[in-house]
Image (cartoon, rainbow, N blue to C red; front, side, top):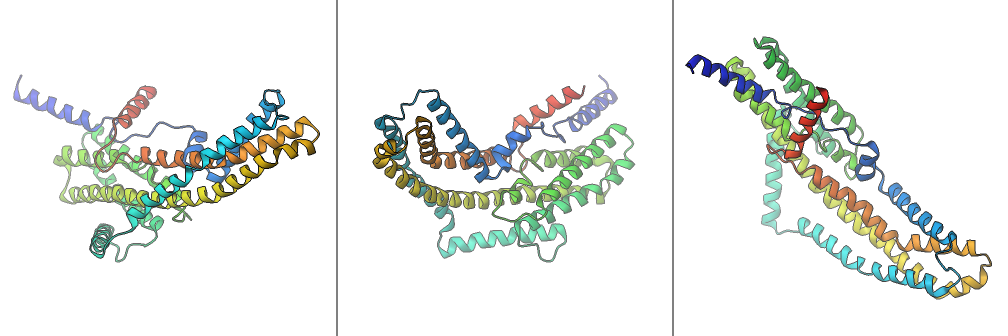
Length: 354
């Protein structure tokens, strides 16, 4: 094979590498209902829905005659078992608080290092975004970084116009479009969001992941022959900004996790105490309730209500753990590394388009 042919093959291999769909891709569209249940939905509302499911299930079985509600031993045995299972929640709450406190407590030297590292991070972002003082609010800080990323990316439009190879120009245009689209989505999500709510973290959850950083580095490396010094500097700034955005997302995820775990422990204590008290009172008084309530249907409703009530701590733990686990799994990609599943999703999308 001649040197010219070898050079042509090498150029084709590079162009094919840069134009692969795993560089700039859109995620598979998930069910809005699934995302609402796992992430975006109000935890109180979802807890209420789960509790309603428990109530309807118990009532249906009771009305079908499978629960002998007139026998006090049957109902009180079930409630006693659930109440007994609620007691270990004290241990769970203590473990959660210990986990949160372990991140908050520290000696002056450790706290000073953490403060200095955070200050250095903010100054680096301020330098990249040409901002004298970056915002203190997490939502505003993320908005600043995202807006700067979009602005730097839009500068590449002139680069695409100068490209002699239409395939290369198409790759850059696709990259610009992907970043602009995600920037608009993030800006809309961050508007009027406050820290302590899920909206701030949700804005960048699953967006601006390592695929964009990888794409910018690929363009920087393989299209350098058609890029000016200013273009190269823009791409270098863009790569660094995307890296800082990844760090910011992980930082705010850590802060939110601490907040969420602390809030969960408080909710479990608030729910757990009346559950233990109410379950104990029910076990002592159910025989009297049977004598007072004359209809079996009313007893079924009473038993279903009490069972739903004593299951409430487990329901709360389930609902909050779903979101915590979902956040952890969807922010597994950090920095320049992208999980293989993202590449597989992109390939499936490409096949679907064809």
